[in-house]
Image (cartoon, rainbow, N blue to C red; front, side, top):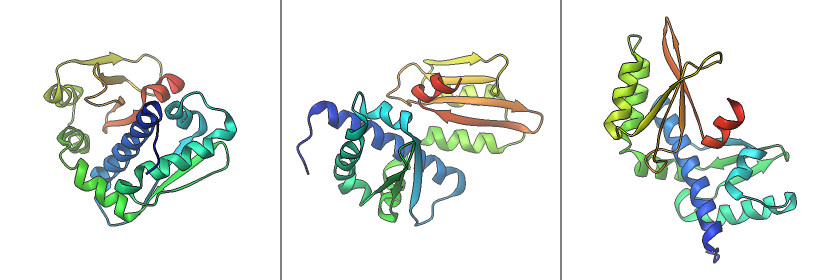
Length: 184
């Protein structure tokens, strides 16, 4: 593996964790199958991970990322049109993710609760509290979502969970803090 400086390694680790957490969320929701999966990023979301680099450096940065994750996620494929990028995780990578993320009981409990038509926001808050009582629950006024919940310590879970409460149940979307601040 190439020798990456500390800053670059932290950037790569952060993107790798995002990809792993996203694929694992899908595995929890729809079940695991031995197959490849694609994760898509808009350019600005991807640049959130790589920091301040010139446009022509992004391909080089992604080439280094492919090398960085190769031992764990396999030969990932990167494609894109300059605005949107696809990171393809091969079967070996999705199997690695399942094996190494399977202990994430928080996400499993959240997805199982959401499946129940009688799920309430109190149920959701209890699931958050089971990981740590140090979380934020904010009511959102006048938007697509009714609530946002997240942990004060992003090492516990770095995402912002946005919930909408309907008469048919609750659904959620998960955002990085960068994407949340860009969208909401």
